[in-house]
Length: 282
View 1 (cartoon, rainbow, N blue to C red):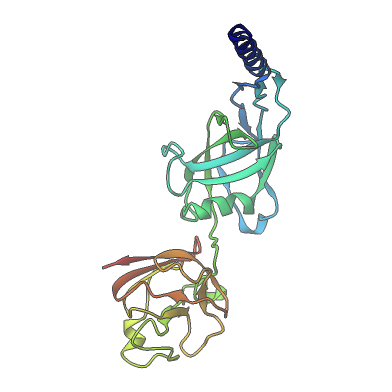
View 2 (cartoon, rainbow, N blue to C red):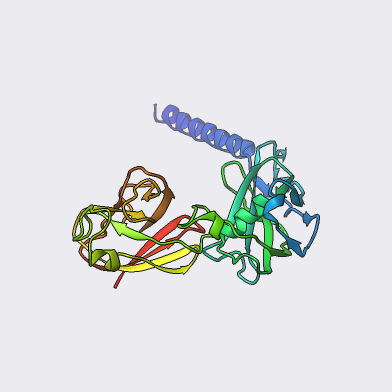
C-alpha cells in the first residue's frame, strides 16, 4: 500500500512539473522596442500670429517603436505623448505640457494649437523662446516607455489666455480691475462693496493676465471675483466647490463659489493665462 501511495505521489509531482514547464513555455515576454525617431518640418524661428490661428504652424512626425514580444511584433495599440518644455529643463519642469495621440505617427499643429501649449507653459507673448519637444511612447496599458530624440524650436507666441481677463478687448485689457466679494469676508455679499472693503478686497494687477491680493478670510463661507462694482454678470467662479488653496476657474455668472481656506490672511494669486488660482497663508 505504501508503495502505491509513493508511486502516486511521484506521478503527481511529475505532472505538476510538466504543467509548470508548459506554462513557462507559453509565457509571453516583452523584449523591448526601438526609441522612435522624431522629426519636425521646421526648427524655427516661428512667429505665431493670432490672425493665422487656424493655419498650420509645424508638422511633427515619429516612427513606430515596433514593440517586440517573444511571440513577434506587438499588435497592441501604442500611445504617443508629445512633450513640450522649456529648453534646458530636461522635460521635468512643473509647466511641461503633454498631448496624447493613439496610433498616430504624425500631427500638424496650427498657430492656435502651438500657442495654447506655450500659453499653458506661461511663456510671455511677443518674446522669442527656446523650447524642446520629444515623443514618449508606451503600450496601451502604459508599460514599456520609450523616448525619442529631442528637438529644439525657437518660437514667439502671441497674447492668449485660458480665461478672458478683466477689462475690455478694445483697450487690450489695460483697464481691468478685480475684487473679491462673499461671506468668506467680513463684507459679506455686498455688491457694490462699501468702504473700507472696496479697497481692502481689491486686487493688484501685476499685468493684464496676473492679479494678486492679500485678503483676511473668515473661517467659513465662499466668495466670487468681480471686475465691476455692482455687477455680477461678468464674475469669475471656481470650477470645483471644495478646492480652497488651488484650482481652476472660469468667467461665468454661476456657482460654485471659491471656498474659504480658513481664518486668517492669505495671498490670493489669480492667473488668467492658465485659468488657475493659488492661495498661500501669510
